[in-house]
Length: 98
Image (cartoon, rainbow, N blue to C red; front, side, top):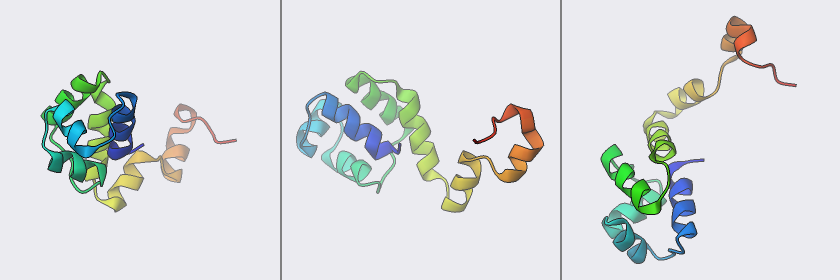
């Protein structure tokens, strides 16, 4: 799940639908909320911690999703999913797919 999905989910649980009311609730700008929801901008960790606190959710998934989103596409896929070489090398550490 990406950052915008996690943010939408957290906002929905609070019953927040508009960008303006979401920004007021989170204590951020409308522009930050809009750009984050559209995957245009990734807030700083400090901001994500504050957002998570206001939403009453764990900040770790937001921060992880944010850092993953910042990675170049070619790096993102190789770091987030074990390659065949890694599976072969690590063998017993990574369960085989059935």
